[in-house]
Amino acid sequence: MTHPGAVPGLPERLRAWLEAGHHAGMGWMAERTAERADPTSLWPAVRSIVMLGVNYGPQEDPLAALAMPERGALALYARRRDYHDVIKGKLKELAGVLAREGATLKVFVDTAPVMEKPLAAAAGLGWQGKNTLLVSRAFGNWLLLGAIYTDADLPVDAPAADACGSCRRCLDACPTEAFPAPYRLDASRCLAYLTIEHAGPIAPEFRAPMGNRIFGCDDCLAVCPWNKFASEAREARLAAREDLAAPPLRDLARLDDAAFRARFAGTPIKRTGRDRFLRNVLIAIGNSGDRTLVPDAVRLLDDPAPLVRGMAVWALARLAPEALPPGPPAGEDDPHVLDEWRGVRDKGGEGAHPPAGAAGRPAARSDAGQSA
Ligand code: B12
Ligand code: SF4
Ligand code: SF4
Image (cartoon, rainbow, N blue to C red; front, side):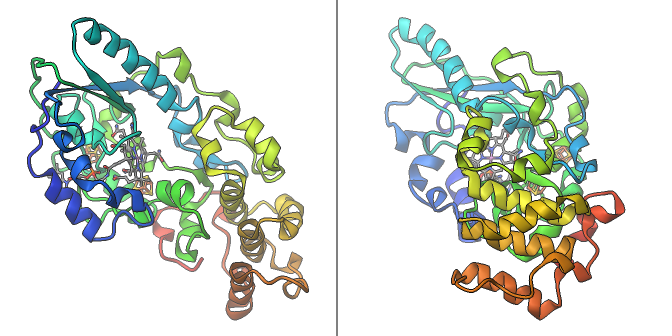
């Protein structure tokens, strides 16, 4: 538990992040900044804040799928039911108890401008690590957060001290060099942003480093030494779905809109929509080195969605340039798709560069910034 003034300097830190453009295309982060950085601006009556962390610790190595380039790697949080629903349910239970004492309450899980990590750190759940996430001595990096604001005066906890020390594993593990400095993240370079939040084509420089990460990224979480104290998630409603541990890219490339919605119903993946997801799957196919996936990429050259057609061009140019027709089909007039075709022509084909998966491993940090 903490109080609304527990993190002085938050408005300045948020402003610096926004001024640096580190929110990328998330325009909503630049709106309602006063409410985000100061709980009393969001709700003047707030006196105390209860922060909740829900453990979603993995059963196995969360990065195991990265060694299987013909399969997709999904962030751990996404391989299960949408945490928003689950945490909101838990917060409401807790809020019910406080409400019986006569308090007024508001419950938030990403639903309002609330800075959950610094508030959770102030409430003693852990500290913000150099990867910017809330790291706990008891659960490592695997806590999802939610908040209750209340007008009741509750006792406050002491904040937890930063225990990163001289470690910088998370910073060094990032495949796209998304940390301009410790404790600072430039979302425009982060694969979690690019694969989930970003709507358009992913810039070429990030495609090879993506490897087979098709929804989110756990690299800077999974390498943290504090995870040795983590335990497996106990909340049954957050149990991981086995079919999402490392799904074959072939199956994912065949999803139409209805199949996509059915497969990912109730998970955070559904939110991105089929076209954005297929964009990511095609980049993974391009990186896979698995030529049995060529027919699927060829078929997607004719997909109704320009985002998908464009990435099919890139994937084939990288995986099997000889399978790519000599130029765009007559009638192709989407500027993004035509750009991809131009890219192939100008560079003589991405296939000139060995796909990341060709060596049996997905692209790692050393691939960042290479031709893609
Ligand atoms: C926007 C957002 C994103 C963006 C930007 C992430 C970011 N780091 O800001 C993107 C899309 C990239 C993203 C990615 C992910 N996200 Co996100 N995201 C959010 C969201 C909605 C807001 C975060 C925010 O306020 N950012 C603004 C910046 C300015 O705030 P900040 O990160 O706290 O930045 C601080 C530092 O810069 C610090 N600072 C600056 N200098 C210094 C110096 C020192 C010494 C210190 C200590 C601090 C410091 O000051 C800032 C303010 O505290 C929150 C939910 C919420 N409402 O809080 C979830 C949230 C942070 N995400 C979450 C998760 C799980 C993820 C992913 C792991 C998902 C995945 N596997 O793909 C990745 C992790 C990437 C990463 N390393 O951060 C969880 C994190 C849980 C936890 N244990 O921390 C949250 C809290 C959602 C939830 N309800 O559980 N996310
Ligand atoms: S989530 Fe992945 S891409 Fe984003 S900062 Fe962490 S390691 Fe880098
Ligand atoms: S990996 Fe190291 S530097 Fe990064 S959050 Fe964990 S302890 Fe801190």
